Length: 198
Image (cartoon, rainbow, N blue to C red):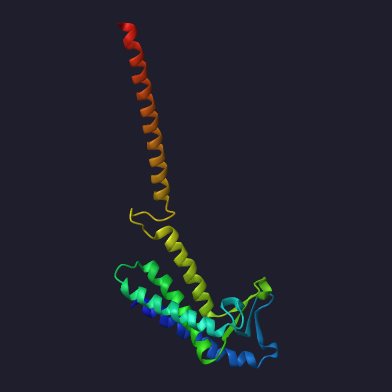
């Protein structure tokens, strides 16, 4: 249920913002409205590429890729829903919701509509709510995979527990090696002393 709510809210917020805001922007000079001077504006941009304007004029490619990703994500989310943590559910839902928002634009309009403009702050790309959901969800998913996901030994890939365990194992191995070396040395010394005792 949590995943469905996040996905629906992401898609609805993205599409409603575009539906009500873009006609207003198209009527403005330069199709932009300054919100915070020299920092943030609302600017209408038609993006025929991926998020933040990369890979322009590849609409069919993105439709195919997004379809495959959405089907795979839906299968994974349904198949593993009982074992997913809330963190993973939120991460996946944001990614899926963002992908659907831009997918709708590409299917029915032919391009993605972007409105958030931080160029005054030095950020060169105009983006939308779907893009933001995709980026935030991807970052959270990366954090989950690197630091939260448990491997077979119950430790995360880069967790502190794993580092401590590896350090302890290395220390124990070194101590065992030193003990073995010392034992071999003492056995050799005893073997040398036996003939002289006779």
